[in-house]
Amino acid sequence: MRYVPAKPTLAHTGAALLGALGERLCEARLLRGLTAVATAEAASITRPTLDRAEQRDPAVTMGTYLKILKTLKSLKMLKPLGTETGLADLAAAALAAHLPGLHACR
Image (cartoon, rainbow, N blue to C red; front, top):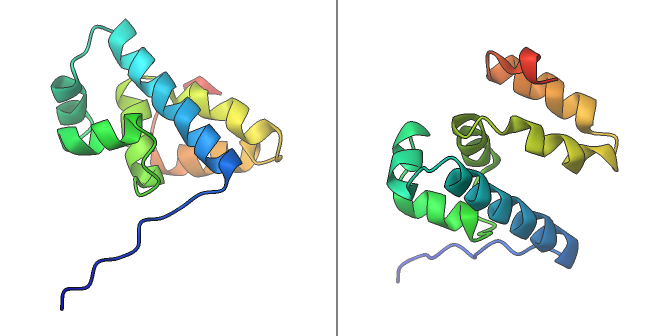
C-alpha cells in the first residue's frame, strides 16, 4: 500500500489570506505582462507550482511564495499581512537575512 500524505487544511481566515495572496500574485504577474511559464522559470519553480500558489493551495511553501514575490518585485505585499499580528518587523528581518536587496523595500 502506498502512503499518501494528507493535504494540509487551513482555518477559514488562513484560506482567505492565501486566496488574497494568490490573487494578488496572479494580478501582479499579469500587470507586468509575464506569462506563467516565464515567471516560474525566473523564480526557479515549476509552472504547476506557480499555478498552485495562485490557486491558494495550502501545500505551497512560504519559500515558494517568497521566490515568486521576489521575481515579481512585490515583496511589499507581505507587509500588510504582518501588521495585525505584530509580525511585520520579524518577517522583514527574516526576509532581509535570506533575500539580499530587501533593505530597499522597507
